[in-house]
Image (cartoon, rainbow, N blue to C red; front, side, top):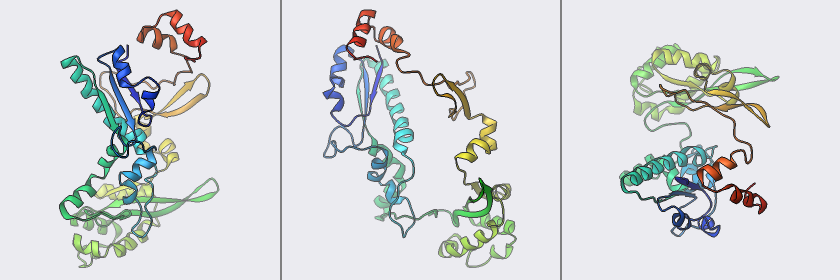
Length: 319
């Protein structure tokens, strides 16, 4: 029998299918079940339906994304679907398994997607509860670094056209500002009262950004990154998917991207795990074909006999 059942239908759907927690618990009292609905299974919004983009908007992430004079925008990826919720779900499952080892009892985990992603906006929550301020959109700027932004670099040819290139730079303190000024050949700006302190740089951040942009515009983004990293100023190339797959030296060194052969789709490139284990190598395998593991799942894991499985095929329950 299975240890854990995971579902992400809207509230009530799994019960109407006859596969809810109470129904499963009758068959296996120590079962652990996780429901990933948009807003949780109870409460005034429990019937609200949606997925990642809706959760990001409802949790306040969209409100913080964009520039001060622009409308709220999507963060660009459905973080709830493959970053935030899976991690929180995994921890909840581990806690439930620990509880079952101690007590012999299973339990039902009700995970709200938009509550989960609201934790990523915790600093704005803290700002409101302590200062009464509603944080607004700030673009690439920061409340603790100045200047901070993404700066244009030398364009490069790509597929017959010139591609924009950018480098992210963040100046965390006065010493880093001095180092940046020296690297730009503008040591005079280090003690300029317009920029010499964090407060003055915040007041004149637009001017500082123009100065940095003029310096970065004539250089390759990778060169800017290397030069600033070399003197202790935080900087990173803004990369796209092609960069990560074909040009990133760290990804190439770690072997993060793996070539995997699939029986139907052929060879494709996949993400590998973002960690290594000292005692066991990690393997990336192709996804199974439809029904490839039916016998193993239904007979060895779920305990059905061959006749019961065949009946499932005949009735269209199993494909």
